[in-house]
Length: 139
Length: 139
DNA sequence: ATGCACCCTGTAGCAACTACAGGGTCAAGG
DNA sequence: CCTTGACCCTGTAGTTGCTACAGGGTGCAT
Image (cartoon, rainbow over all chains, first blue to last red):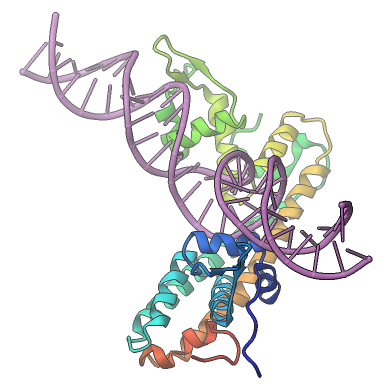
């Protein structure tokens, strides 16, 4: 178990299932610290970068915004701090997800209603178009 | 029932619960035709604009993209055409909504799991942070 | 030495708006 | 008549989270 050699940006991308451009973008917006450079000006990443990027990706998969992840990272770095703030962010995010879920559920119902009524005749009496048209005003 | 006087952009915005800037943007991207202008260069809208904008807004509320609405509007204008294409767009959209719904449902489950385990101690043993950290690598 | 895969910076684009800045217009009140 | 304030105009830049070039340089194998 010798300590691993540094990774290029392509290696890191492959290891985290991230695009190279996305990694550079994370660096620009200061989610990921700028790594050292090789003689030829290539970025060289170590295991700490790998850990941090994995954290970011997992957070994004869970739907946290970049700003929320920035906060979570700052807290994770300050290990003695209370976990209550972390909990607050996570709960706020869950509430938002649940709101979106409710909206989409309602939406799917409405769409299914509208689609179910379509007899696929001509547009002139299409129920879908009618459902979109202003209430009580055909033509 | 005399025919209504033309509306200003502000009137139209109020009538459709839309922002003034959004209406101008719809005009720029050719969702809404450019209306006539007053002597003082104000936009003047008639009932046809009101109908069309209501259609657009309802479509947006149902989650159709601007491009989809453009297609739907083109079809709605061509009243003899078959309604099958309209049905296709609506079904494709419903399928997309259902996919998003499934994703969000999974997400909400994961978030609830993670949050449920948080004892709100210090960050050092926060389960939320841990859940985000790379598999099998504390520190 | 020449190809090829990879890396670099910087900029522009996507969706669907939103938010100004820096002006012009119009009706009412003093 | 003049001012005040609410409205309107155009044009540009910002938002979120990337993605896609263009126009170059690097590194390794043949």
